Image (cartoon, rainbow, N blue to C red; front, top):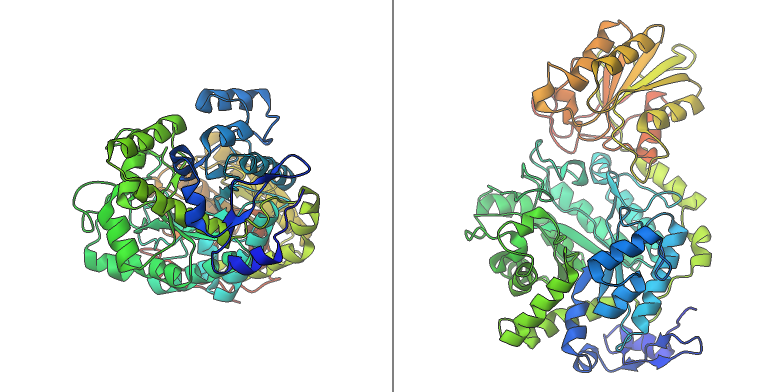
Length: 599
């Protein structure tokens, strides 16, 4: 049942002057928020447990709020002591839920909307009737939790290759509108990291590029696009994760930039996000000695969170931690101390602690002992409540699952994604003028190489998806996937299939430096070249592959392997679209920043 704001509430919202009180019961039995005079009045009516709960954003298991599959019920029971997602909301008064595919929250857009509706009903039935802020990592490209039939757009580095701020803004606007239709009001995007390290194992194509000014322009564009659709944009990962060689999911990275380098390279996109009005900024689990010599990760660093983000950049919105179950934030302190230290540093939202019960108990104990004051809790609480109000949650928190088909993955949205993707594919090399391929001249194509797994935006393995797109353009295609670490048998199968073909398109995926001139993907490409059949190499993630492979007849970069990017690459291969993408990062030893050929 939808909730509609009164005229008085709508007029007051712009001035943050209306929030729900404890609530009154609706005819359907779900608590309906009632307006009061402001966030402080609402906070004054809340217990300490309710206030602390509002600071946490947790995962839940299952695609249904009240009727989980048995395995998901067991997971909820093991982690939270209750069986359903709705009971997690009720028991802990959490302020938000983050959706994950591995938690079985994102099976389809329709089910996501139904889950959102059920979770919001549980929140509205609570003692304060405060709606949830539902969130997701929907960066597009390599990281997308919600797949088809939702519209998937090119990822950040592909948008960086296009260099079109208007296109980036439109992609975020449409993506945000679809998330809103599912009840999601916070996206952990855009990535504001400047990727200046080809060995970065966790950012790479999730970044718009290596030029801080270009990245800043695209970050600001996406912030505006998301928030035009009512979605809280979240610039991440402050103070910058672009020059690290450790994945903070599994270790604690160290940024070696000087303070001057940070100001020149890492700061500009975050400053642009703040100026664009970003609702939220996410912290990084990295050590940055030039900014804080204590050895604490940035998430737990008051000099970084408060000193730089709040005071230097003037950010007044919500600071959300990166996930607290990641190794980078857990190495120095125990799980009981991390949430307390994050709040002391200046963070507001505490994202996905590994043990929610322990985390809440620890914060409550810190308040009772005096380590944290209730005023400090209130400061974060008020920022979160204001964000919920600004994003319309008190006016209408419930999505309408029945309207999802008309709002998500529409023909208009899909056409916009293809139009934006048309400018992303980068032609790196074509020394002999092989491209474009013509089905009249070279009708038989082998598509082989890496199948790095199927992200949400791909219908099947990438080799099969690209072959399907090329077949639709008139080619006769054969597919021989070899994986990202091809065995001798896989290489032999691809080489055998290449003979008799008119050309080979080989997909490569993050070729390791140590693999160059030896085994794996390098050996696959070399053996294919040795057949004498023209070989086109398509880097489907980081473009740095171009410097780590043998010379081929042509080389391109698509920056991801989702359908929309592979469809754009297929059209470039076939000459239906002229390549116009330009490298948003340099490829050391091969191509400079901004390189790109056309025909």
